[in-house]
Image 1 (cartoon, chains in turn brown, green):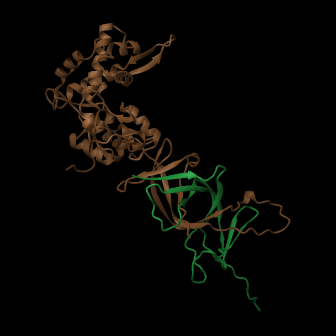
Image 2 (image 1 turned 120 degrees about the horizontal axis):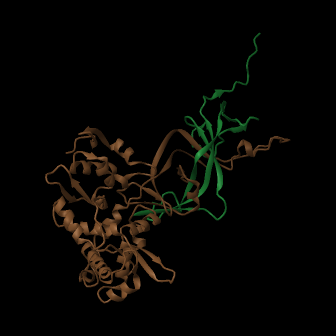
Image 3 (image 1 turned 90 degrees about the vertical axis):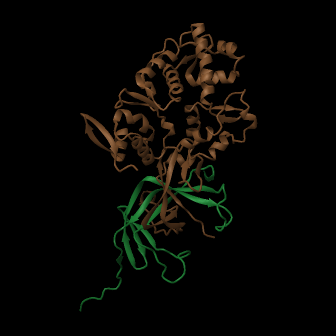
Length: 352
Length: 117
């Protein structure tokens, strides 16, 4: 019986003491996942022959002052001329959002859930479908504000999410609470008749930072930027584009009192077209763009031929590998030139 | 999706193996496989230089500490013909942190030099 002994190279020592899983569908490139990291796996070939010898001694291990000659018989366990090479990579998480968007949660009143034939996903399901480590998956679930409903991970349908948010912001206004001190208990009491309490708590967690005061009461410090951003999304999703100044006016009026809107709150969500007269703004969500680096750049350059670094950064930031900068990405995937004294980036190749 | 689990074998420290890297190929003297045959003799000089004698050739190499170690995996399963099921397993059997690299040309060992008359 031959034992195949694949070698795994570039193996951080910490890896081998934990459980590792290789994951991939037949049409995907395999990745290796530890508890919290994901690695690309590639086969590396060498023209040299690699023999592996258990227990073979190195010079340091041999006693210099051996009185007599010893012959140590060592067996060669096997040989190979290729090995698996690991390189840390970005976890492939776009699929996670895609799976959860198949069947967004529209609230308890929606008839959809009862009749739905769509699959719902538990954590275990996700681990068997997503090429990422468990911790990276759990972290991403938090980032996209997913919640567990009856054991399944769900994303809220946007309109339902805004409905919940509006309940909270209206309550904040009518109670004149400071945005930094919204009490959980009162929210649940006042809104519990309108919506499930775990949904109210979920929306507070999504849009605020939870803390406990000295008396043990739970409060939320609301994220003004995130509330403004979602309000903008709600406005922008109804049209192809908007007159920028009109939009800014409506936007400011739509956010809760005391909040100030700013265009930089919309990075990665919307894009301003400064070349049109009048200036316009339209929805462009980074999460709707391709995950692969080259595909992402192709997509961006087909939307707009030339980009400034400021405009493109929110749309490529997530592509950066460990210790890679946006500048490095631009050098690799774009060509730069000067336009009216400003550095702009365009595609390296013609976009069809 | 295929999920292949790789786990550590046993609770104790992993075995430390050594890699021997040779340029070119090793061929059996007679026909038949390499399995069971003796490769050769490995010596170290007092300076710690590894010396390998294979057949009638001698090779000088060097000890290299690997920046990134290798892990040796063994596939778990009854026989090699068993196809990898959706939950095939590998165990980490050993770590390799050192290699003996032989990349100089093997020199033939001449044991009998006729003396000049």
